[in-house]
Length: 94
Image (cartoon, rainbow, N blue to C red; front, top):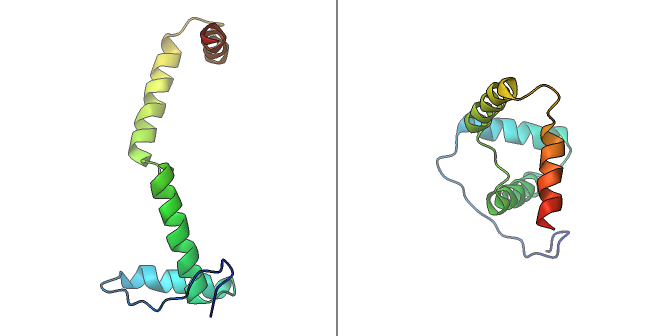
């Protein structure tokens, strides 16, 4: 048979998967009323999109950046707006 996206269906075996991850995944699929094949297809599709487009965030790096921004904000002049500064430089590039 064919799935919703007209892709060919395939049977697969996944080895050495974390048992708790699998159990939680299966429980969520059941909770949402979808078959494991559908849930797995969606998970694979989303994982691929995130990897292709770099949307997976490095939390530790983001926290370091936030701390740096807070530190630098404390050094800036009173009344100075970072947003206005960015807009000014964008206009100059046009």
